[in-house]
Image (cartoon, rainbow, N blue to C red; front, side):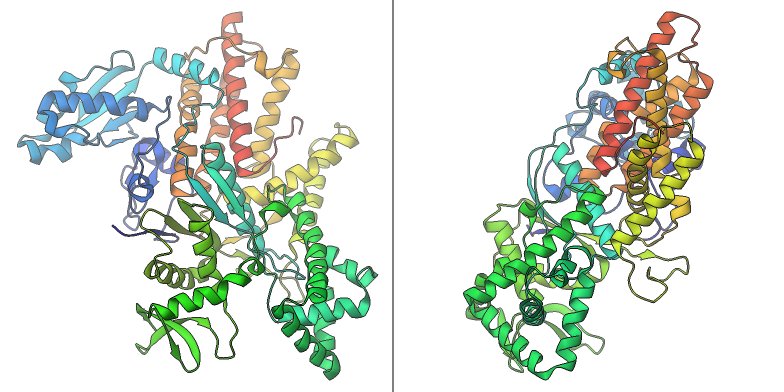
Length: 640
């Protein structure tokens, strides 16, 4: 058995959400694209690579309301009854169907094993199948596909039960300790648009895994150590720790950094003092450390402004910067050298791992101590792995960082494994982060060529959102429009980021992102706000709508089928670590509600029982939309 290592990144084209593939299959486009390798995991959608159960070492959790999760054990029992105990646990291969709600394709895979024609296998399974309480019809089509159509009665009961469940069908998984490394800005430097994705994706994964029952330990691995700090400390001493220049660190850290850099490049005496200050810092000189702490403290104010504006859950208590591991670096090097894992090469202490070579076949080393005695990022990252395993007792460690870091991370993990610091039962995952591009499809930058400031992007999104809401709802009070504009602007940014696979690039287009139509955050927020409006007009609170849900119309059926997938979708995000699947699900749920709202009068229903049922169905939809958006880190205004 080896340590579980996953790199979640591009492996050919992928669907934007499981729901889109589900829709394609239901419309008869039942062939997966040739460049997508994977499988349908019941109603979870396409899952690439090894199964979540195989990766995490635990069985996949099921939702009590997802039709596939309910039907799978019934079909499994029928297979065992028809062909014997040796076939217990066979996957029924359930997937959406263009002919019914679900299709079991297990007969085709079993035929050769049992020595019978697929259709004969299907007939035996159906003969032993007891789903009279779930399905209104079970039919065999083609060579042996088993098509199951869920009964209106079961759908009604499942939706009513889901409405009574405080978790909305989201399962509690077996608890794991999961450190998540994300955001990681640098002290005294501006956070730019490139920090958006790691921060937003990491925060959504943290929220989701916590909701699934895991102990998430947020690890904000800030850059708070290194040679530039000699220059920064000297500059802070020159200008004064309480000066206006010092307060730039709270609002415009790049200016402070640039002023220090200009002095370092133009003033030899300042440069000499800065180099001497680095020596004092690394030696633990108390006065120097005090100024360094002040420098970090001022930067924290800036970080927290960004995190507050983005509505992410990171706090000062989650900081785990490079400096945290300083006193462990020498021991890391000593142990690697003593055990023969690291060797001296050209004066540096290096680890040469099998399989890591350059273009000419030369070995590529992981440098753990430079020839001048300094330590590199690899050393700190090794100490980080050791700490997270031995001190935090991690079961699963997520690194939500840029795709280019994949080689470095794998070298660190392989070294840690060789040293015995990364045991077989700990999973490490690189959640790869793609780039945010400008309209020219190049890295997003300002007109001057500098990286776009993240705070500037947030401010611009909020400005555009205010314009949109002013034009769409001039009747709303000024105070309400002022309150919801940032929720819409930030929600638009976050949803645009989370609605695409985290390892892919996307073009940032604020006008499109803030639109109230299309696959956008504001569209989902508006869907929730519209449901709130229904209840205001009804003169009742949504949580008062507790009548039994009765499925009678096609639009009601489609909406309930979508709602019942919520729990399994959230579980999939926790397994596959892909928030875009939840985003895609919520978009399709909002579309299903829009169709229901147009075709099925709620407040003007034909009779009171139908009205009450549709109010309950609307309230359930609101809860799912609100909970789903919360897991993405997006607020749901009650008015839009």
